[in-house]
Amino acid sequence: MRDALAKREISSVYRLLRRHGVSQRQIAALTGQSQSEVSEILKGRQVMAYDVLARIAAGLGVPRGYMGLAYDEATAVRVAATAEAPQSEEDESVKRRKFLAHAAAITVGAAVFGTDSGSWASSPAQTPAPGRIGMTDVRQVEAATRALRTLDYQYGGGSCRDAVVAQLSWGQQMLGANATDLVKERLYVALADLHNLAGWTSFDTGLYDSARNHFGQALGLAKQGRKEELVANILYRMGRVYLHQDAPDDALKVFQLGQLAALNSGSELAVGILCANEAWAYAKMGSDDQALKLLGRARDEFARANLHEAPAWAKFFDANDLSAMIGTVHTELAQTVDARKYTRTAIPALTKAINGYGEDMSRSRSFNLTSLSINHLLEGDIDHGAKVGRQAIDLSEGLKSVRTKDRMRPLQLEAEKRSNNADARELADRLAKFTGNDSAA
Image (tube, rainbow, N blue to C red; front, side):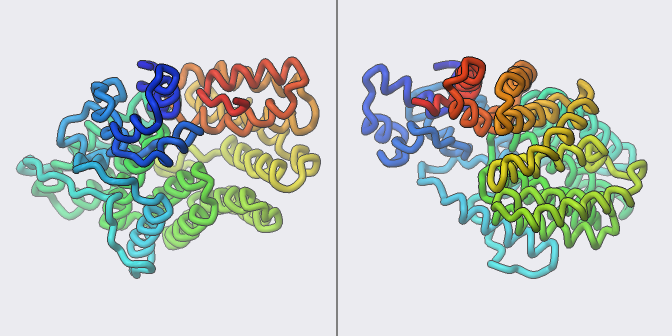
């Protein structure tokens, strides 16, 4: 139970309660949820909202620290937590719509659907500000962000998220300080990128509402700092959250807004990143023509980009990452359109990316090993596919990333389809244990 709580795997928590005689009705009464919500969670629906997790902890009499929720009031605000009275979860599609309206208002200067942020954005508490700041203070924020981003890439968002949030709490105080216009503008950009990283690490640990809040705040600060390239990067990352939630339509809208900002910035690299991710969204929808067209444009933009001048938030996207995106899009098309046709491109692209990643990019290697394993299973090369899948699990066991587990679920399904093969069956069993998702049951 402690292990399930630490991973915030509420479906496992509820199953353990049921196993020990606690009924669905009792769970619902304790946590303030409907029986249908409890039933959906028991079937595997994930709980991401901070306030709902806090309510579950309170209802079950679980110390919040067991679930990593033991924040003080100021930090709770920073992570978009709400400690209000229990209420039902707002529909995720409504939250996506509100974020899109906010992003559109900032990117094109017009509210498409109305700019009410509703429950996804909180009002930061006022904190005492230092009297005056200079460029040295801003450089400290930038240096901390670079160091924390390195930890995120290598060990996962769970390794550094609390440190990012703590750094934000300190950095936000600077906004009330006296400074020259030049220092202020650079401070806006530095804090925008720190919120950008807070959103990314929140996403990686499964805190989607927190991610949305941080990305929303990052957009406003990046716009104040007149950094269109960073606006594009923030929108790319928020779009990835929606891709992960299997909402490619909403992801595509956010990516397209990001592409507007990227074009305004004049950065070929920013445009290339957005095009590659739009291709992924189209692939998820089974639209292979559009996916391949945008992937081709991503290649062209990348070929023109000056990587040496890329800012910290975009430096990750190098030749390895381009190969990874090519492999990822073709893997998606192999699953949604034609396995034989698209695995031929996916396998060499993913292999190239995996071989190019160093130990500082462990999470990216894990994602690509997972996709490579899927392609080998689709091709019928089950022995090799299972071997690569085991490598992905071995690597991911050392990462503090919920996302790596989520990305393995399609692989688990493919392995279970071939459970008459001993290697596939053993891989499916290991995946079920690692992800905590026994889909066969």
